[in-house]
Length: 321
Ligand code: UDP
Ligand code: MG
Image (tube, rainbow, N blue to C red; front, top):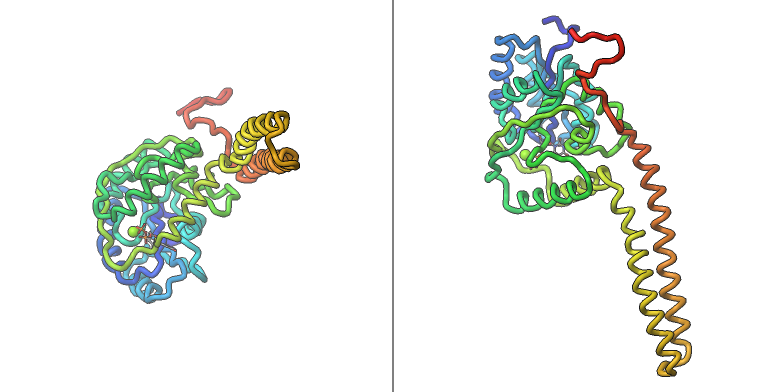
């Protein structure tokens, strides 16, 4: 394949300080892709996004590239984070048919890739879902489960147990790249777009080498991005508190007035209470109103398509071949 003809498939791999595992990663991924090529895949590229690594990752990648022409490397100037690295990779992936995203640490086994592609022939998106993640720590599993429950409760559409190992067809990649969101969490944005999708189960591997790059603080940040990205419900909380406050204050005021009427109170208590409670409630209600408008602005800015026409819908006068 000549270098100026884009390959059919891109494999996008964010890697942050993964020097220890990358040689083994390449050793396992390459035969899978070469075999697919033998079976008719019209060219592939592996695009590793070096997310500002400070270890020997750049050296290791340069060495691997020497005898693997399909390996491309994009190096980010500084560590931008997993999701940003994925976005950088998607923006540069040349795959004509689609893109597979996967971690560099072999927790996403390369051997699952052919099944993703096979399912991708009939679907826009194929999620690899972890059927067994006993290799992950209990803390990771519990926090992940809580996280997805919360996201779904807030109206997000994340498929259960899906990480960022997935196939996305070209049209999905192009749609995602048009979204102006800065902190998009791809695994939540993509399901929200309404493309056809399916899942392929796999057993989560153990990390090949090195340590996790997702300490608790990073997981928290991802969760915040995910929650604020998939819902404006937190903004509505102020209105709810305001309404609840109004109810409570009315009861309190009634009690204060009755106490005042029967003369069983210190002077000034009733009026102080009325002012404090009333002002607090009023403020929360006003914040809630602001929240509603800010929420709408935010959704407008995210600019996600509100609908997508199905691939098999027939437009006027058009025939499907
Ligand atoms: N990663 C990255 N930038 C970061 C953190 C992680 O590109 O700032 C990559 C990392 O190299 C790996 C993938 O994202 O390929 C998933 O990270 P990791 O395996 O550390 O997360 P875990 O599997 O522990 O959730
Ligand atoms: Mg990992």
